Image 1 (cartoon, rainbow, N blue to C red):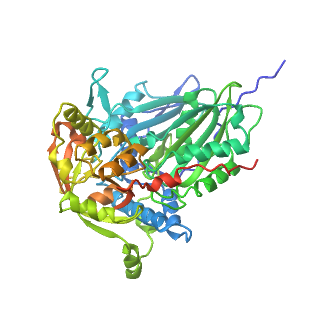
Image 2: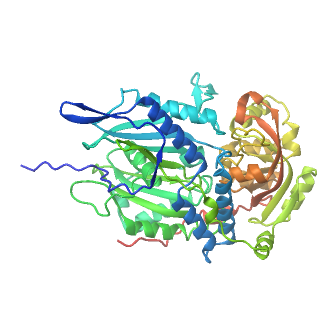
Image 3: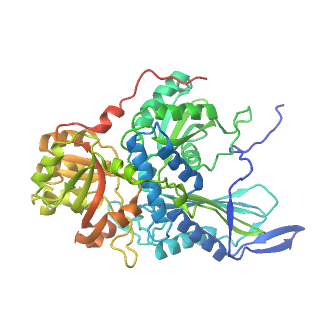
Length: 552
């Protein structure tokens, strides 16, 4: 008979996280049935989650910031790479002040908890975690993004950012310990999680390379690169594959073994990780507007699988790399030590370098008729960096849907979409004494289906957002004389502090952050991505090549 042997599917090594101790009651030790148990009050779990959400909304890991600085220092990085990386470092410095969150999309809260059997809590852990999320979003300058279905077709914002995604597990070990991973996942990066149902034929160096060359290019820039990229091949089910991809993108699985065995556990293929990273640096997409830094790093995890199934999961963590580990033990309550002084990663910049960084930037005055703005943009090649000053109209998903309904009913397009460029965005809460809350761009692609209708009606002729767009937008811009300007995805706090001078609601105030706004901006950075001649910067870097293969 075959001998029974057990292994965890995800056998992690020792936790090397640097923690800080929180001033919270950890719990009390109790003796029962000849064993020692740690009794933890629900209020402690709530307070820990609340503190974790605060930290991940404003602070980043030192390793992430060091990677951004490495982009700035790399002589092979493109000027666009260095410009984006520098802006993201400056954004981190603003966000670390604890007032403006690093991104306006403060995300869906995801909390994974693992406790040993010697931890006692009373059983209402999910409620305690959710209360911590609730209290953080209520007290901080974050954004409520969760929509509750009131019927199959109708929704309303919950106004609390609940429900959170809470997953609680038991873990082996006689030593009392309750460990947590707290994440905030924005819509942009969550939407770049993909599942592909493949076959054994993909387990070939050339076929896998061609597959990833195509699929990774299609990620585009809507989720704010440089990315922490995770690729998971295999899995006992599709949902497990995607769960592992999400954890790997957060570097939660970094201590997996580096080789497999006949026991069927997961492992990281570090050689393949370096090959995939090299592949991404040949794309030309770079840190959003051309270059080599599409990804900071890559995690490749191989899982066991059913012989008739080969799921492949791809996930990213974006420039708002928001997660932290936490734990409650008999020694106290601990939270991962994130970087509180990101300014130490900023490069020294002298006057000459500042002048050089502004060379070639085209100033665009938005306080002019739309025809004049478009005429100026028409003379610029794609990839030109521009600096915008003047009024913008802000509208995103729900506002676009409502305006489309008006057009379908025979009404004219609102005059404000004729007179001003439209910025796809939705702000976080405005802190007391501030003009604006964090107010970065949202993913442009979600509005693609509206563009032709709006431009044919005379509106949305200059659009501003983040990420690449579909061919229908390029075609519409060529037909109607329109433009799409790409804004840097990620530095929402910096934009609020340095570029946004006034914010007013124009229409649909009941929609909250989804309302139509009018804002005044000064020196707002962007790049010409799609022009009125049918040119699209991303089109040339989205075509895969057939001349790729990995080594075994």
